[in-house]
Amino acid sequence: MYFAALLARTEDGWEASDTELDDVETLSDLTELAREASDDDTVIVFIEQEDAWFGIVRIEGEEDPRIYVSDGAAAARSSYGEILTREILGDDVDALVDELESLDLDGTEDGEPLDGDSDDDETTGVAAEAVPAAPVGDRLILADLGMSTADLLALDSDALAEIADALGAAEVLEAVR
Image (cartoon, rainbow, N blue to C red; front, side, top):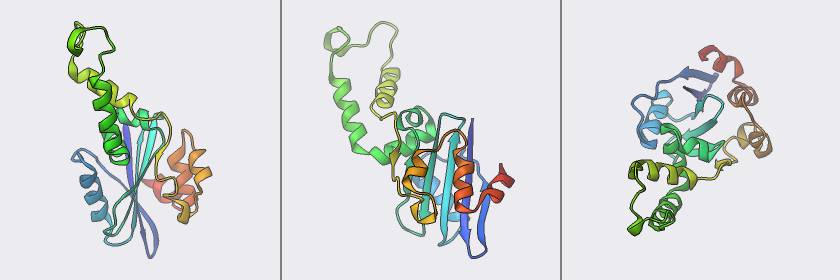
């Protein structure tokens, strides 16, 4: 189960809205969704999958989005998290997956899958294993808004509420939760 919310900073403070991610298939889709919420202001997208991981995407006008994910490996195993981790790690993940897939470590000839294994399952598992089980991305993503790197790294199960509190947006986030 996912929870997603947009926080848009306006002249009057933060405005929050929950959002559906059904039509989001790429980071570009997510960025476009955020930009529709606010023209040139700062928009923070929160994505959380239960207590497994959370992600933050920060969009400032037409600049490239900045991304932080609390647990890269956990996020890489989910559809929206995979979008974020692949964007953060880019070609590094693709190269590592290609390298790992080319190794014949299972004892079969020519790297053929074991009986009952499918290439799709193997590729997904390898891709998730190639991502670190640690925070990935821009650790300074919220530093200028009142949340230091140390505070961000120390977050746990109620991360989004703590982030919203640090930004002064706890009440508006709680209203959409």
